Amino acid sequence: MPSRLVFSLLISAALQLAGCAAYRNYDLELEQTTDQLKSGNPDGALSLLERHNPAKERDLLYYFEKGAVLSADGALPQSQDAWRSAEQIVIQRQDTVESTGTKLLSAMGDHWGSIINDKLRRYDGYDYEKVMLTTQMALNQLAVNDFDGARADIKKTHEREALIARQREKEYEQVEEQAKSQGVRVHYKDLQGYPVAILDAPAVIALKNGYQSAFSHYLAGFTYEALGERDLAAPGYRQAIELRPDLVFFQQALRELDEPGAKADESDVLIIVQSGLAPARSSVRVPYPVRLEDNQVIVANASFPVMVMVPDTSTPAFTQMSIDGRKQKLIPVNSITDMSLRTLRDDMPGIIQRTAYRAFLAASVQGNDNRRDPGKASYVTRYDGFEHADTRTWRTLPNLTLVTRLRLKKGEHLISLPNAPGAAPLRIRIDQNHQVIGLRALGDRVYANGIAFQPASSAESRVVSGLKK
Image (cartoon, rainbow, N blue to C red; front, side, top):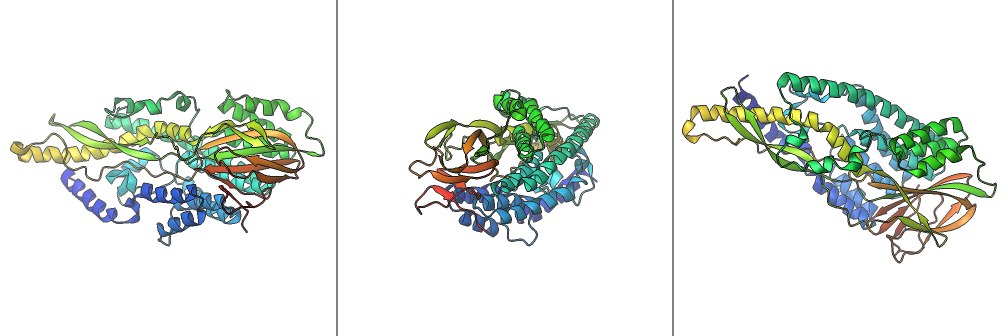
C-alpha cells in the first residue's frame, strides 16, 4: 500500500479517535482529582473520577485511581473491590501481552494506536504499577490486622515479578531483532533536545530494574515474621537488601530475625508513611531526521515521553515523625519517581522503534509531495499534528514511602507528622504482637485509616481519619 494512502488512512482513524475517551486530557482530569485529595476532600475526588469516566466499560487506570482514592478515604473494602477489578484486568492481559516489536508489526485494526500515536494504545499499566498494586492491596489488609490476607497479596506480588522478568527478557530480545532488521539503531542519548540527564541519574541507574521494590520485599518479610514463618521472612529481607544494599534498615531486620521477639506487653510496630503523588509524564518534541531511498533527508517532529521533574511542593518533605512526643527518624525506602524513570529508560528502545516508524510514514508522504512539486519542497514534515507521547500514568499512587520500626508498649499512643502543623496528634491503639500503622501525607493533610486509629476529634483538623464500612 503506498505510503500516502497508508498515512491518509491513519489520519482518518486519528480524527475519529480524537473525539473519544482514548484521546482525552487525562493529565488535566487527574490534576483536578488530586487537588481534591490534597484539600482533604476524597468524596470530591471520587465524584470527579466518576464524572470523567462515564462509559460503562471502565479502563485499568480508572480502577487504579478509584482504589487509591477509596483507600485514602478509609473505605478499605470498597478500595479492595476496585483494586481487585484492576487485578483481574491485569491477569486477563498478562498471558497475552505482546512484545513492543510484535505490536508494531501486528495487523492494523486493534493496533491503530501503536502506529498513529502511543496515546491511543490500550493502557495496560506499567510494570511497577502492577507490582505496587498488590503491595497497596496488602497495606489495606494490614490496616485491619489481616496478615493472612496481606500474605495472599504479597504472594501475588512475587509471582507477578517473576512473570514480568520473563516477559521483559523476551521483549528486549525481539525489540533488538526488529531494530536490526529495520536499521533503527538510535539511542535516547542521540535524540537532540531530549533531557538525557534525568534518565541517567545515579538513583535511577542504581535500580536493578523498574518494577522490583525493596519496600515490597521488606513488607513481605515483616508479614511472614508476624505470621511466625521466619523461613519465608528471611528471603524477603534478603531480597530487599539485594535491591537496596545501601539501607542499614533492611540489614538490621535480617540480623534481628533470630533474636527474641517483643515481650508479652509489647508490640513490634512498623509505621509506614506514604507521601505525595506519583510523578506526571510530559511530551517533548524532538527533531528526527529520516533518510529516504532517493537520499532526501526529511526531519519529522517526533514526540517522546519525559518525566515532569518539578518537585511536588504541595506536600512538604519530612524525615521524621513524633511518637508520644519523641522524635523518630523515618527511613525512605521507595520512590515511584525513581521506578518510573527507570521504567522509561528501559522502555525507550521500544518507544523509539514505534516513533521511528511513524516518523518514516510522515517523511515518506512529505518526500512524495516534494518530488511532485519541487518548487514547494519542504524538508520538515507537515503531517505530524497528531504526534504526541503517551503521558498516562497512575497518578494517585503515593510517590515516597518512608518507614520506621520500633517496640511499643501495648495500649494507646500519640503520633503526628510535621506536614500537618497545628493538628492534634493522632491517637492509636496498639494491641497486637505485630502491627502495621499506615499514614498518607498529601498537601498539608494526613490520611490515617485503620482499626488502630480513632476518628479526628475536630472538624477543622488537617488529619483526615476514620475507617468506613
